[in-house]
Length: 324
Image (cartoon, rainbow, N blue to C red; front, top):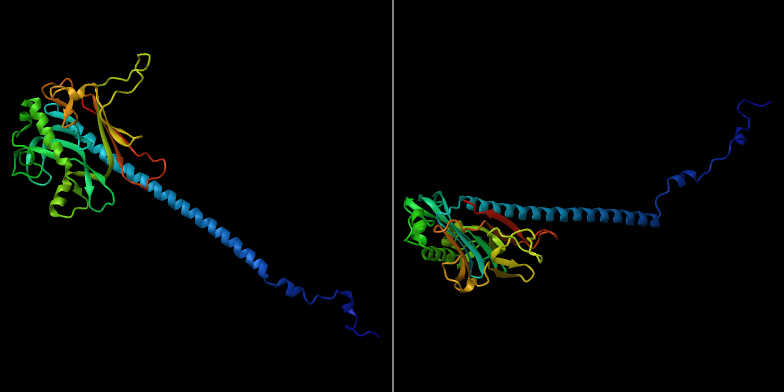
């Protein structure tokens, strides 16, 4: 008689493996662990390299934006000044200490930025002056003083009477002067750009002189003018664009070149539009003949930033008309 539950049920089931659980719970071998770590290292290294490249691209983009912003500010200042220009004064483009410079007269009411002097009209100049202090190599400063024709007030460093000449008190005096007097006055204005400027300033006087400075990181400045004529090709036909004369920049040779409208400009006297001045080039227009003034003035300048991204323009151009 077979007892209940005594049947040989174990014979109906396959025996369980003793090592199946331990096989499922087995960890990495040393080789597998090394392969995993190496794979993670490659992934992290690639990710870090991507982040580094993104940072470089972002940094270079910011530097380009910064340079473009600085150039736009400079260009806007130049455009604003030439919108104020009047033919009741004079306009002079000259080579000054190996660089280009320009002097013009503004005809609107002007006020001193360092004092209470007021005047109707002013003299504005642009040029380059060597920057000193805190720089490893010579870098130029874009120089822009404005001297007002004082008619009231107690005077200031911008006062034309105390800083340049006592001969001209008003714009009307400049208008009635001859070319020789205008040329002498322009020389006095441009001569002040020869004095180096310390940036950052090291004295109180140096800090006060910063009112003349637009920016302190300029590599070169060329100033040219056009009478509206166009270049002529081999067939005697205009080829487009304008003829530009004055103090230009040869980028290939990294030097300034004089491009006169007349080949014999160096032998002409001060009564001509172009003439020699101190061994250099000068073009002068005055109120005595308001009809021969140039059609436009072109400024080309470079901004010093060795960290600009590759392919970023190293020259900026602004063209302003001189129409009355």
